Length: 262
Image 1 (cartoon, rainbow, N blue to C red):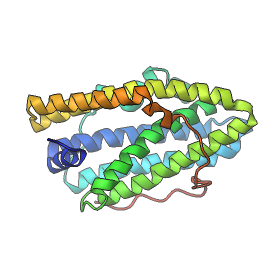
Image 2: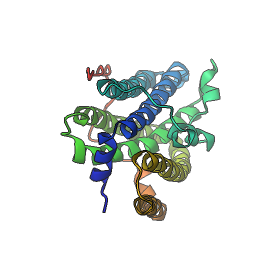
Image 3: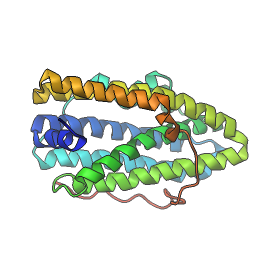
Image 4: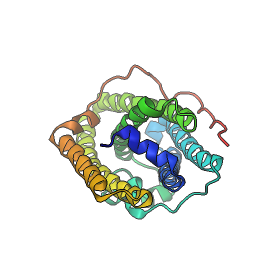
């Protein structure tokens, strides 16, 4: 039998699998930092008050990338190439979810619809991130090597999710409710597929690194597909609901600097 705890422990205990895990995570966070930085720079005049929060969001993502890089250095490891099929952010972009990088590279102001799209995309993906961090905190929040990093990132992801809820509700009150719900549903449907495919790809790579037997790899594949089936049947609803968060103005103020892990 295997569990989330035993799987992650196995990945952390092996230098090659740990290197791949941290490299995939660092790459995704760095992409998120760049995207938020560009969105803040291109914010339309009507929503300029959001720019500092988007900047803070991007700074947090950059910080997370530096944390994963520091975890690698702490063990004397260098970043590994990230397999294309494990690139969650790029795969979502290919499905037309979120704002295309081509658009973000231009020096043209974004529209209000673009910002609604960004926030809706973030609402969905930050829910995924927050859910994952809840699990990791439960099992590894006190781990001597990765526990501190997990606790810091989990706190930030909760802030990001609260920010998305609050800002989308504010925009809904301004008359964008139907547009927000449509984009949220489109994002959630695509995210379920991408998350399933990335999970399968990551476990395939980990299985080869750790030399898992076919029975174990097959069991993991079945479990990942079962989660996808549950989410398609109704689990996706947690990604599209909106409620006023307990943490108000969660991204107000400057970001915290990354702690020293090396």
